[in-house]
Image 1 (tube, rainbow, N blue to C red):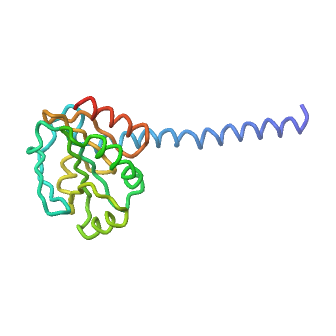
Image 2 (image 1 turned 180 degrees about the vertical axis):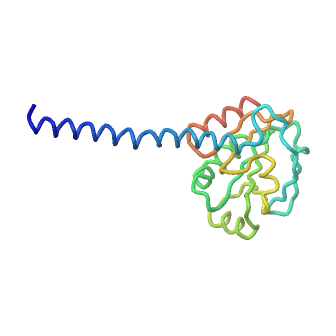
Image 3 (image 1 turned 120 degrees about the vertical axis):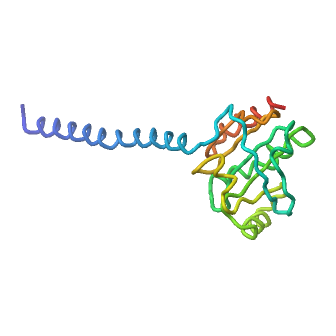
Length: 183
């Protein structure tokens, strides 16, 4: 065997070893992130949705229990959250307008932010749908302990029928289908 062949085999071995060293933590990291998300989701599909009263930016107060008989989308978000902003680009047309006149209510609840911050964001982005405030994360903490955006679709009977974390177009479509099926 020549020295070139030995070097070539050594390079191949080192490259394969390096690939394994890099790939193993990446797959473990992806799995552990899913586990972390699962561990921080306090309310799961099939659970009764915990009741709360949210103050909307217009000062109106809405109790979840007052919406029994309607399908409710509870969306936890923040103005600084890039995936939340992406998801919001679809909220007016794909959620509010699509389900207008049906037994449906969107509760888009800002997590950990003051009214002035939410008002400024809303005005700058031109959003007109109702937004709620949870400055101390008291409502959010009944449902989860980390990660946004989070969506909980609550059926007419008050039980959670769909849960999602983050924003992906395919996931958003699945959420819309869950809302449609519940109506």
